[in-house]
Amino acid sequence: MQPDIAVTFTGLKFTNPFLLSSAPPTESDSNIMRAFEAGWGGVVTKTIGMHPVTNVAGPKTKFLRSTLDGRLSMQKRPDTALHSSWNWELISDKALDWWIPKIESIKKAYPDRILVASIMAGSGSDKELAHWQDLAKACQAAGADAFELNLSCPHMDRKDMGSNIGKDQEQVSIVTEVVKQVATVPVWCKLTPSTTEIVEEARAAFNGGADAIVSSNTFPSLPLIDPETLEFEMNVDGLVSSGGLGGPAILPQSLAKMSQLTTAFPDKEFSGIGGISTFAHALNYMLLGCGTVQVCTAAMLDRAIGPNVIKALIDDMQQFMEKRGYTSLEQFRGMRRDNVVVHSKIRRPEGKDYRGGFDAEGYAS
Ligand SMILES: Cc1cc2nc3c(=O)[nH]c(=O)nc-3n(C[C@H](O)[C@H](O)[C@H](O)COP(=O)(O)O)c2cc1C
Image (cartoon, rainbow, N blue to C red; front, side):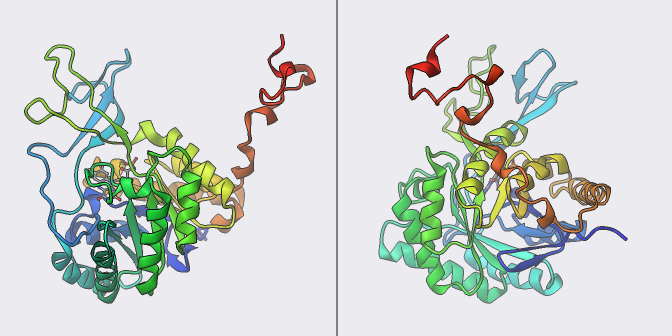
């Protein structure tokens, strides 16, 4: 008998803990249904807003690859390994009205799979805050099983949107509370990693009533400049703006954010994202305390929705559990959370003491 990899997260039953994150793999009903067919336990829709958006002219995403001699470039070359994805894509270019019938038909076809609606609006006025509630009410009436509040899109100029909300503890609390006032399903908050102390934004989200924290969205970054042309490898008319880095490069950084979160709130629920393409990667998030994990870049590069990625994730999790005699994720979730400590708690050679730089002894010899 195969070990049971089903999980319960924020009260919802998932057939497995692997979700497609909000991004191009989840931008349409056909993609989402293909994803469920391929075996993903849940799907977070591409972020839905009230109004259609207009993306930049030209590509919205590219992939940075490295050669063995360390040359990083977005150009397609032989013998390279994936380093990261870089994107400056906005939220869904299809607005709420387009999404509602799609959510209905997805849930009709896959009633047992978890469909999370990612939503986003402004927060600068009561009217804007009411948009969050309009989005939430419409999506849950259509059958969405949970919400993921996008408090983390890194490409918004407006100070009251996306990661600019995610950097403002007061706005994080207000938006979460406003959605909680009307939500009949769990509310997850996807925070930005682009903040000094993510624990404080998470605290604000929990104070507003959040059922879970999701981290990370992409990290702010620039494409590299081509040494031949002296142009950014990704640009429109020579111009670029800060975009989001995802994929393998952000795995260790995102784990550091997640560790801060799960250490600060050991009894709360977390969904981990960032650089996951194999079960070994996902396991890191689970051992730090995550109950589900999400995937974007790896799925984009695997037939748009990751059929091979999800198959390997499921097979390898089952094998891992079977080999170690685990019967549920709960038996190893958080197992390494408390191994991340302050620097002064790390053993010194020959029993020497170090008090974190608080006294002269710490620096001596
Ligand atoms: C092209 C692209 C579009 C994305 N769009 C969204 C979005 O609409 N909403 C959102 O919350 N995250 C969005 N993301 C972020 C991903 O969901 C995910 O958090 C991030 O890519 C890190 O995961 P990864 O390392 O597996 O790519 C997007 C990422 C990419 C690459």
